[in-house]
Length: 211
Image (tube, rainbow, N blue to C red; front, side, top):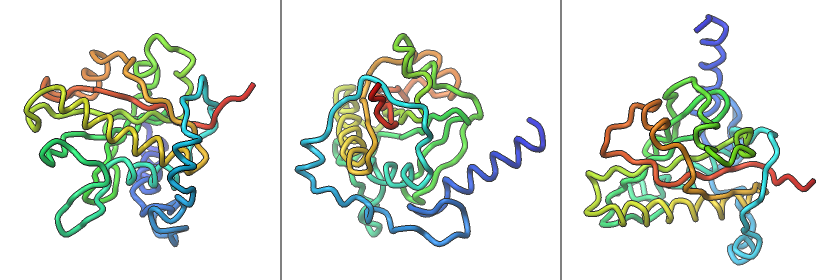
């Protein structure tokens, strides 16, 4: 990796590691997490749908921060409980942000992300639905089977996180599409996931393509 690319990744990491609503480390937060989600819940449910396609327009880091917190961020710091329930509070779902500039893992306790790899895995996540390979963002949901009693529980937990993501995206003016289609073998190999950690769902996120 060239020095210029290393510096760029540091800047990207700083932006994503900033508090919700911030665009870069050291800047004032635009809004506390959750404050921008002003759409009433019933309206979000009414407007939620799976878009046929999305544009390549980037999803801003501030919006990504809000979505990640909604996915499975901590909403009770004293007990480390999260926005999404899980089987026996197993908290088995790990959320990865897959973008053109690499893959990042969300750390709920810190409300932060950490760079995993610089590779563009969007084509592997899009798989045979190649029209989504240019989407600006996927959230990849991975269950840890050592934390749940059976695979079904992991799938249900991923679905609960996905619903949080979908409603948050609609509230923020974005279009989410949950999917099970993906190249799991390639993704697992690239992310060096152990056999006990299994990609369950992914969610395409972007602005809906209307023409």
